[in-house]
Length: 94
Picture 1: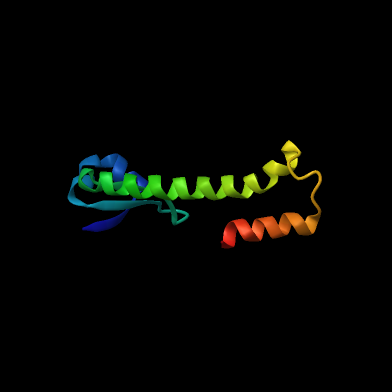
Picture 2: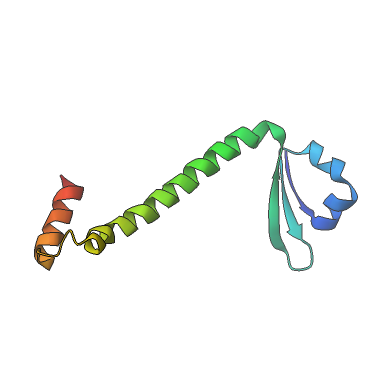
């Protein structure tokens, strides 16, 4: 079971969280989502999902940066722009 509770509701009665699998915690004035409470039974699944998502985002950032690493190391000093593009296409397509 799920619910959307206010911050004050949680502070006043912390035991209310035991009734739910997860609870969205919101600021009742601004109706802004402040956080998410996940029950102990779902913690492992949520952590695995988040770890996978964060690792994917980190790898994407690294891949984007590595495109420039060769330029910094002087690897491509003697190559033309077209030759670098051809190498990149060959690397990622085949």
